[in-house]
Length: 255
Image (tube, rainbow, N blue to C red; front, side):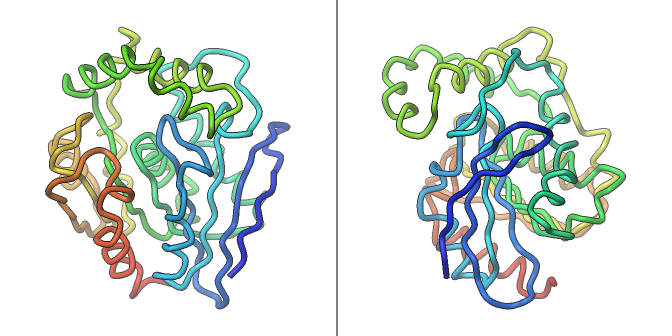
């Protein structure tokens, strides 16, 4: 297995990415990071996932994150829709025809939106950790609380991003923007027909199980749930072994 870090150009934007290659013809897994994430912040999870599932794993840092180009303008409430719309171009840039998606938090929502798109045939399945489909008060409370800790978090974020303040406030500002309070993507869930694995920590400080309930009711494909005790907002870091087992089982019978 190799781990080669590189950059790709997507509509003229330079994005950092990494690939953990496994032999064989199984479809790859694409990782979509959280609202403060990047390629590097996945740490050793991609390598472990590639070994556990016997599939190539690819991660990239969206614009504004990691060592990718910075964003020129603040986000609007539809920013995750815009990221989902870029996936076909990303597939083309990576020379991938079809893949499985594993998304965390914002990345999970982007994966849902991509699977509901007219070109969703490129997506073979979804695995979603801590997804959001509507705004809960607990989410607003958690994001408000972490804003007060930015000075504490900045040094750590600075190890993973070119501009920690750009990353943090770009994410934090839009979630706390009054325009975002009515954000809701439940209407598009009925367009999703691929197998979906839902993963949520019981102690998630940014969401409740209502997110999973609404996804399960809304999508038309088969759904499995993994609810993890003693686990917060990052199941792949906090309960890695259980998440890897669930992902391996989820993908075992899929191309």
